[in-house]
Length: 143
Image (cartoon, rainbow, N blue to C red; front, side):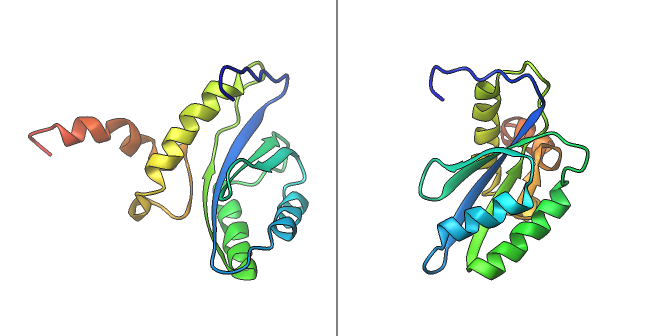
């Protein structure tokens, strides 16, 4: 994504996944299962050995974060994995997804280590207050 642009005519969200396998990871079968469950996925790929990106087009019956959490809890049990999931917001048509992904990636990497505040599946609504105020709170004499 470096020095790239990705402007879409429809509304999409980026679902970021960090997957750790406890044994042999059946990656192809795992990916196929996800593609069956997310019928409106525009793209799905791993960009590291453990990190994947699911790009989903907005539709009338999209899954909310609680439903997505249930899916990945089931997949973790079936495939002997542990998955952290960041469910991005749907971005308006005409938005450049590259800088939005970069900011959402920073949020995901920062907040997945603060799992005491949320489940392994979380969204901006779950972590926004903590993410955007943590530095102010760290420097505060009152808190």
